Length: 274
Image (tube, rainbow, N blue to C red):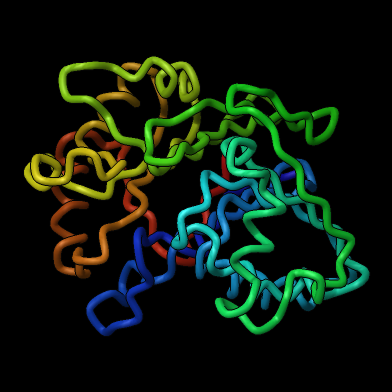
């Protein structure tokens, strides 16, 4: 069985459908991980629509949606996820931050309630389950696929994930803010010896100074943490909407000069973990 990652949405904050964002992509956060035949979808931003359209061709099927948190850019693709309307599709939606806000089911019902959206959650006819957990819990997807979680530093809370399969690990760590001069041990332990770390690199160090408290990090900090944790590769992710293709290309050059394990996530990019 394979272990691979595909990026369907790499942008943060708001979708950017413009000619200046074509090279890297304008859809918001959505990453598909296939591990041992299990489909794990990290976040339900606008990139989820394209993933859903690709999945419609399948006969039946199932998936987990694992949410970092429920700010709009990470959930507003969900009402357009076609498989959720298919009776022969099994879907489990999970979140580690939502209990204090009434649970993930309540939050998803809310975003699809009038006057915000014309079609209610109940119109989705798939075999759908919503489940809350606490960040820090382990989730057994199957005998061979384990997901470990950790709390992240972000307004209203967020969860980071580590998917383990056959001795390999892929981590999804987005919407987390670092504190300059300190090391987030939660993140370091989550990503230790990982094969791929997808990390929140919304800002550069120069930009971060004026964005303290907004809940995001930098590619420079991501590289520092990955080196500390002995991770093999880091995907720069959650691109700021003001970062056009030209800006992203410069970030890519700078990051690669700093560490050859750094890459920049692009929509439709696929990585096989070997």
